[in-house]
Amino acid sequence: MSESTTAALERIATIVGPKGIVAPEDAAPLLRDERGLYRGAAALVVRPKSTEECAAVVRVCHDARIGIVPQGGNTGYCGGATPFDGERRQILLSLARLDRVREIDAVGFTMTAEAGVVLARAQEAAREQGLLFPLSMGSEGSAQIGGALSTNAGGLAVLRYGTMRELMLGIEAVLPNGGVLSELKSLRKDNTGYDLKALFAGAEGTLGVITAAVLKLFPAPRSRATAWAAVASVDAACRLLGDARRESGDEVVSAEYVSRRSLDLVLRHVEGARNPIGTPAEHYVLLELASADADDALRAKLVRVLEAGLAGGDILDAAVPESEAQRRSLWQLRERVPEAERRNGGSVKHDVSVRISRIPDFIARAERELEKLAPHRLSIYGHVGDGNLHFNVLPPAGQSIEAFRDAAGEAFSERVHDLAASFGGSFSAEHGVGLLKKPELERYESPVALELMRALKAALDPRGIMNPGKLL
Image 1 (spheres, rainbow, N blue to C red):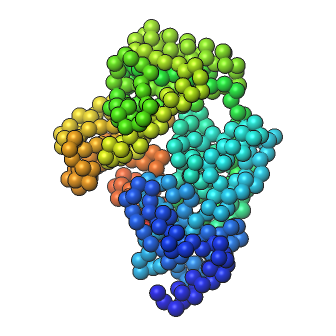
Image 2 (tube, helix red, strand yellow):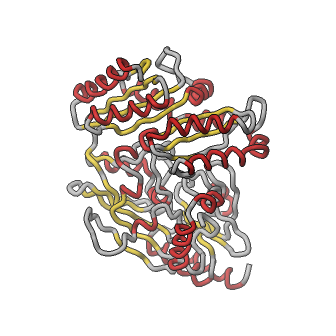
Image 3 (cartoon, rainbow, N blue to C red):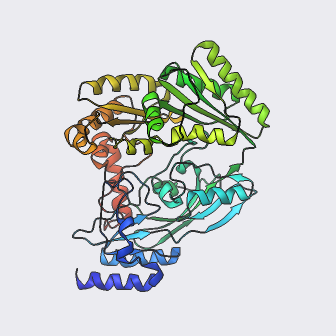
């Protein structure tokens, strides 16, 4: 390490003080990604406590040409928050100490929260005001606002409320030169030039460091109505979604598809999990409505949808919970599929999206195409409400995931992603690009779009210090 780099790191340590530096013996969990695919290293792990400290740290790194890897809750699947300390030294910049909910506007239905606020805490803060912060996903107990914005997280309620980009009204971000973009506006209308805040949503920390944001809130639902339905086909699952939206006046919050193969993994590996439906089926939908209506009124809408589906043959059988505990048991069947895959030995994951109307054709084509490659098993589930499928491939019984991935993982991923592209879809619906999917971005994104992305990166970060090696 050069003397100039050493001096710069010493200045950073002075800026944040002892509480702002993570000791090397405590840094290991922050240097490993969520899935254990990447283990990195950093010259320093830094935790500033304010936007001002963050900006001062970035200025030092800019002047010394030290790479900066921003990190939220470190729950990403693509290695985007893992530092790799090569020739150009890098620091890991954790936003965990920027953890204040600065304001809740109960009249304008907004929340101003710092980047390190955990999603569950944001939900709780909104709930205390009788409001709803709608982003919900399996990692909400550790994922943070800044990371969710940087990856444009989606989750379980995109159908009703949108992704993080759509939930953001304003932003505060430290630019690569240490300047601070302070656009914490709570305005629903602001037609004054470029939408600068949108640049940072989905940029994965390559254009700057998000330190705070203004987020949309919504009225807290007074009632929810949930059903676990066995359906006749994937086409029937998609029709059920459309019928439910029309019948309820678009009060559908979530519509989750679970294949029999994914459900079997949960029933096998998750203690206490059980299928509430005895009727054999290959396809299931978890449907949830939410409303300001009284419970009986919303439940009546759901029942009408289910009765129509049963009469028309799309629904084979259905279960409607009578308690919150029963509702949670239904959600467990969907939410714990990834855990069940891990306990089963792991999978080659694919996070694709296509138009909802094309989901049935995509699944049928993908199953046929993959049969040509090598013996395997499938776990197919996801957010049918927004066209996002987790089309995961498991090794055949008796083969380790490592051996399977080495022998055929790349071929399976290429075939799934090629097919998604041919359907006008995306190879990354909600998990981002990071390091893992950089080759896919080069392969599937248009040359014009890539050129524009690189031009934006060069304009904002000409020294290339922001999350180097990720995304582009």
